[in-house]
Amino acid sequence: MVATFSVYFDWGGTDGTPGTSTDIDALGPPTLRFKNADDATIDENDKLVIPGAGTKYSFWKHIYLKCDDADSHTMNNFAIYSDGSNSLGTGIDVKVGLQFPTKNSGSSAGYEVAAADEDLVTDHSGISSVATIFNYTSGEATDLDITCSETSNVIDAANETTDYVLMQMEVINTASPGDLTNETGTFSYDEA
Image (tube, rainbow, N blue to C red):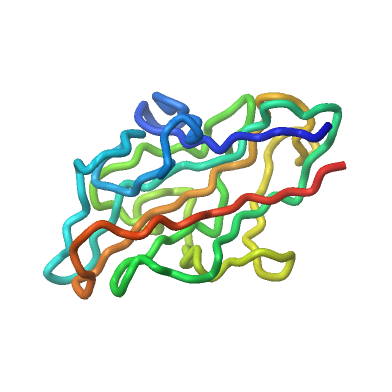
């Protein structure tokens, strides 16, 4: 047998105490929507508006892997990556924080409530730099390594998690209106 994981994101509540943890498998497809609201609803409401100038930011997402069943295995070397191709169109990007605020089976200390039109670097105390998720592709040299704050920096039991991966959509004035193509992010890890 092998270990099993689900992808979750936290939302609502207060800093350090998310109101809801949502398993994205229950939502889609698509399973996650960047929008102008902090919730898990996949619908046509709360659309991002193309700005006349500057940048419009979606509410950020606190995403993480949660172990469903470790099956007597130990997991480490967590990473996330994309297919390397942004098919969202000109003027639209998905940024990922290059720091990973604390999330584990005993703490959500890295959680900060999302708000309208806040920039990850400016407004989230756990994020000091971002990059486009499309810079990261599969393979040890090109994926984005994720930290783990569980004991010994490994996951070896059900309900243990990776730290948070923060993501946010950015829209600038050169974007075109309309529905966007779905993109896929992939998590990977080593299992022993």
